[in-house]
Image 1: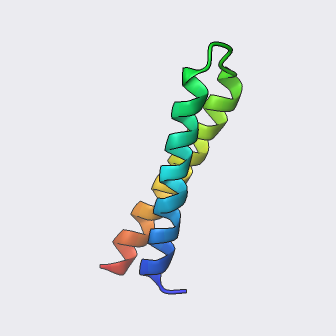
Image 2: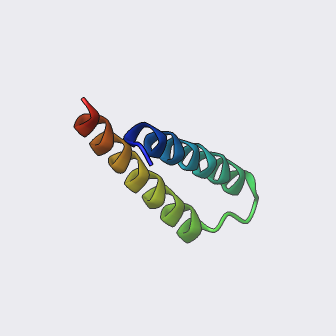
Length: 57
């Protein structure tokens, strides 16, 4: 898999997590621990994307 393809894949996962977080926070009984874990996953993905973008240039 090329770096560009990996960045796209991670970007898609990042956007999916963003949507999942948005859905979770609109529920009246929001599970704050789940939201926190999703946000951590999203941050890790963003860090991976940033690292890959830096190495691609």
